[in-house]
Length: 285
Image (cartoon, rainbow, N blue to C red):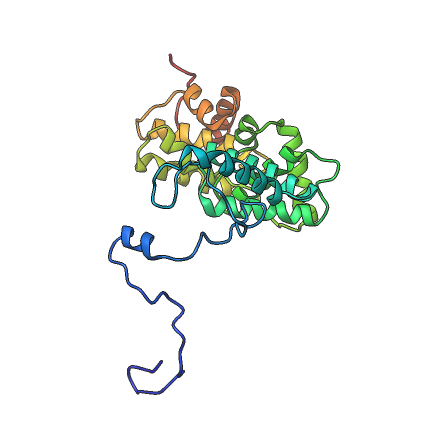
């Protein structure tokens, strides 16, 4: 490795850690690679053990003869038993599959799922699972990962797809965040504006107005002690009136998962304190 300007040799006998082959398309890359999938926290054994596929096909894609299917079935069954050998691995197997199911329903990215699985593994290593439901801690780990990546998902959204209630998830989240020192910042109304306006099919102009309303309200101390989803919903309702892209309070409340009363109350507070001369309007159906 040399400097291209002065010719200084920075390092010699440099080892190229990349492959020795070249690929010009995805098919060539798939065929020429000789390694397996990378390590992942989403599998209880980190993806380092052998897996026997459930498809009755060989490496060339041909059907396995019926005489060998019974033998392959027995190998597959014993392999699955060997991979899960103790109680901790059984716990991880169930919890990580549950976590992956919830993340798929919420359409969350893979890097966030990896982080959620890492949080759950840390909770297991710290012996925080004892006395708590596996589903509750898994859902709390997923909620914590959403907070880390600033991908806002409310406890209501997670409790709808989890097999435990909102109270249990919140209790587990507070416990593991304190014990693991996650230091998560509270969510803000800004975090929800983009997603809510997208689901309501509002324009970028309306979105910018809603963010400006929240910024002014925050500078005047109007959002302290208020739920972030309720403030975001009221700001969006306010902005939809200003930009003449009216959405009913019922539609906004449904997307933001708050009550229509909350939208009305937060909207009334914003309208009175921000000195906007707008009429107080109820839903029109």
